[in-house]
Length: 224
Image (cartoon, rainbow, N blue to C red; front, side, top):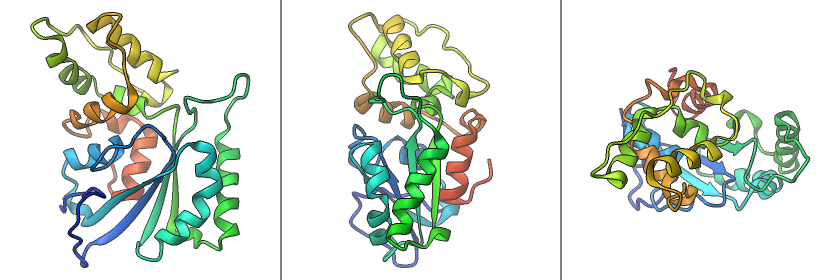
């Protein structure tokens, strides 16, 4: 399998397929890609034989409005585009319940306005937030917390059989952090999400998430 490469790499093999993902989380601004890519890079998906890059938009509203022109530009050099977004962004308005169907319609409207080839664009909606994927593997959470809690032992981390059903996963992660590390040590998404992703040893646990399985299939053709 070919290694999934980050956008920061300067050398591009012309024989590799090139894929681009549009992502609408403003806080994932890490060199070398965000947590989504790190999960793949950590598990060495070499069979995909692809170059994997991120184009991050500022927030969900901007993703919906701008995904059309961005995808059109990316498809000039790439084989396909994956659009990834959280159903429940952190800045959701009070009293307004997000709707995956409405999000999809708005995204396709933006794509169609730019005459984007829809057969080259794939959508992946995370229910509710990326943190649901990170909570899917208790081994990663334990491994990430271990050096932060040293010399004390990390307690038993909850096992989730259906990560996509976790309500308020970011809040759940924050609770784990404060319980294990103290009230002053909170989960900070732009800092800790990438660290957790890098601790996921394989797909054995995260494959329980239907949204992640779709992500793996559309990005790398992996059937988990």
